[in-house]
Length: 198
Image (cartoon, rainbow, N blue to C red; front, side, top):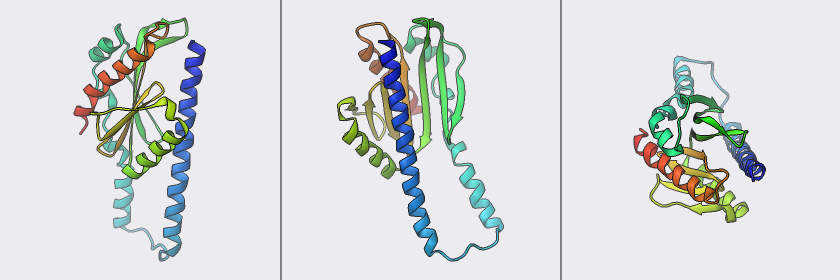
């Protein structure tokens, strides 16, 4: 069961990476079409330096997910002691992982994983449509969370304030109510962090 769960999570992660790559390529192609008809670029000025620095600071405007959920809240959600939160970032997103002290099944700790990245509505809609076409059986809509939300396999995906928030909770891996426990825990995380996002 643990192996099939890990395979499913790897499959979801690979789907996300492929979706992100396809969307980025599509956006790059659109921008290239616009750039082909644009006048030749001018030498860098202070105005273009300002644009570059504001684009670079766009990722820094994302909230730190480690400040949106406390260690005590993560312990309550997972039902046992957790280590200090582990901040990270990858490809412009901000990540925070809370992992239990105890390792389960001799392999993994229970965990809360939160990832936040900037997201435009049209990109969210395109990704959602793609999942509806390819993963319809694993996708379930969620009402009352952010601007839009759905469960995809064991993840809760949320669009709020032009930010894509992905929540994954690993717990109760050897129990018959695993799926229900995970969904309930992910909703508990969302109800804590979404109102705290600025």
